[in-house]
Image 1 (cartoon, rainbow, N blue to C red):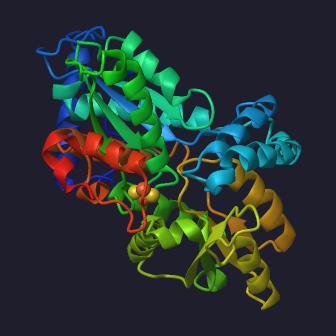
Image 2: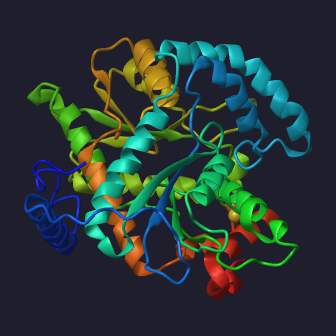
Image 3: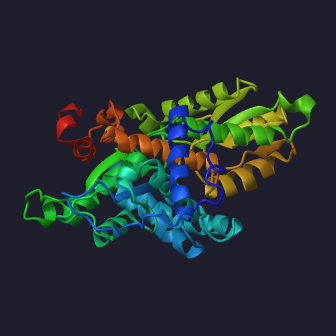
Length: 426
Ligand code: FES
């Protein structure tokens, strides 16, 4: 879809000055070509290992959510089977199905209460498609950019998307470039790590050694990874603007006293103590957003969605809100800081439980990023820098957690780090 006003959607604040100037120039030239009827037709997706740099597959990774209440059971059974997300030790294959079966009726009711399913697929596909349109203008050298969304626990699953890539002409002797772009801005081995382990597993099964008589085939998909982006300016700007919009709804004389409560999904303490970088990266996002807001308000970071009897990282969001309200602090703005779109944790847990239970009109939630154009421009800016850098993944990804003993993590990281950096993986 051509932009009706090619510059209306570009924000100087979301992009660096030079990137913005380049975007504007590229967009303008493409726009004028289209007006003159000279627009180049987008080539079909065909791959040639020795050919041009495009097309490029942009693959968004996320956990996903059940599209309908009937999908909840399958979703939960995959989720509780994932030892990267919910480590249950040797009892995983026994406890996982047991817990998921027990929780299914309750979670089905929650999805029914938010309209019958998760909106995460709708938003992920929209964000990826819009980002690819911007990327075609920002990076014509790797265009066309083809949008894909791969979920960890529900359709479209990683294996389905990998097969789709092969069907679309990538890999299998034809080469081609694909970028695995995590939609968890802050890295955790439970989330991005789990998705990458799954991607690596299906790559081996569908076009790796396993299907080529134990020999690494040539002409496979060339993967690179955007593995974390907790302080990217586009992300920070989008959060800051949404917070400012919510603050503007409070009377002026109370505005500076509103407490900003950043809320992120919690993790079991066993994962934190293993050395997972997530908590530190979430804190980095919070600090960057507060810096952008000139520390205009008091703030705290709290953690939500704990399940099961084991200790999880706190303080819990629900307790935090209840405690502040009890102390007389009834102006609170909740900010979902680790999600890039709405799902059950915002629409049900925050809106229908935490805020409902607070029973105070001053307790509000800041809107999720969803279709936010500043955010999507930020995604495009980040992806463009990655495509131009020729970096396979961040240096940070080459280091395993201090307490990690997983061979799967080791081999996955060596694969994505590439031959040159594989020796750095520890
Ligand atoms: Fe973090 Fe394996 S658990 S690298």
